[in-house]
Image (tube, rainbow, N blue to C red; front, side, top):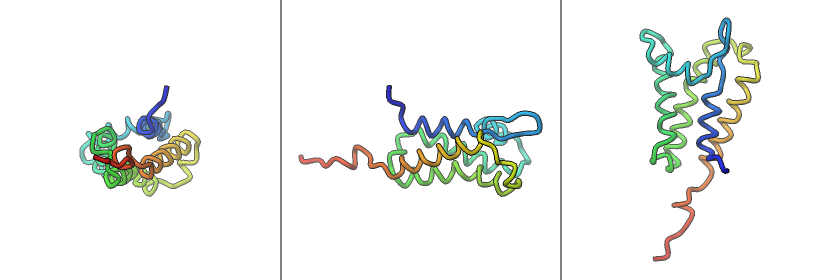
Length: 123
């Protein structure tokens, strides 16, 4: 059974944990919660992250430009959290490992040629 790289990228993105006061929550839950929480400064960034997550599974994702835009949209809420809170707070493996897997698989998806563009039509 072969798991598509898009699925690995999305699952690793969803499994990034943000540690709270008592327990950690998956990043995807934080995005959904924050996007509906009005009056929050992170609301715009959470919505951008959700848009990037949705675009990951559209038919338009085969274009390299959209892949780069999607990666940027999905990284904006993470970068926002990293700049908002001291970096020492994110020094745990349940944040680092899924983030690293997400970035690596996303870069592979961007650099990997599509089947439609790599084959030439001889008709």
